[in-house]
Every structure is written in C-alpha cells, then in structure tokens.
Length: 115
Image 1 (cartoon, helix red, strand yellow):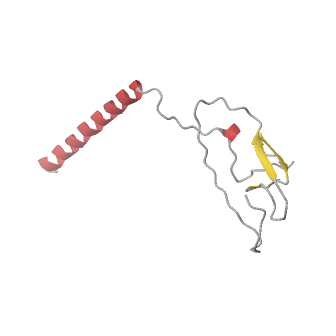
Image 2: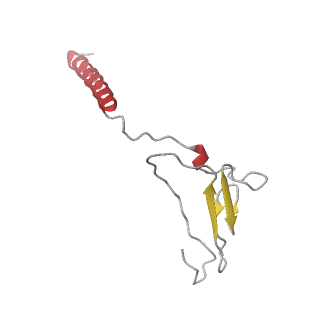
Image 3: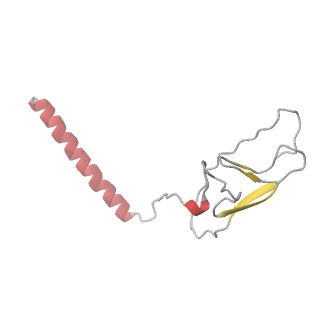
C-alpha cells in the first residue's frame, strides 16, 4: 500500500468524523426534526391483514367494505356500493403523514359510480 492510498484513507476517516460531529450538532439544535416511526395501531398491511374472525386489528370497517388477507376492498365493483375503514385509536400526534396504496379496478365494463 502506498502513501497516496494511506493519505486517502486518513482523509476519508477525518471527513466521516466531522460529518458525524456535524450531524450530532444539527440534531441537538433542532429537536423538531422529523422522526418517523411505524405506528402499528394506525397501520395495516398484508399478509394476514384480516384475522380468522374477519376483523382487522385496531380497525373497524363497515358498509360494503370487505377485508381479506391481503387487502381491504372499500366497495365491491357493483352499483351504489360504499364502505369505510377507520382506526379505533385516537391520534395524539402534532404532525403526521400518511402513505396510501390505492388501486381502482373492476370487471372492465364502462361506467361506475365514481370516487
């Protein structure tokens, strides 16, 4: 190993050290930085979404909604159908965001009630 590669490794180590120190200073001076955690009482995802008794843990659904092992169908592809799913827990967050995967599908015929 030559002196050039040793110097390069030393330089990289120094840069990494100062980066870590800088990040610690930023985090210490900004307690309001976004901190994301997975909130299982406010989330559901497959597999095993619906339990054997057709419930979704921490949620209640109604209307024409259908829960299965891999999804919740808010309404079947039939005319004049509607449904909903709501969490059973109140939110106590100052700030929050939501990520939704939403798919509209059906039998391929023209016409629908809309969203």
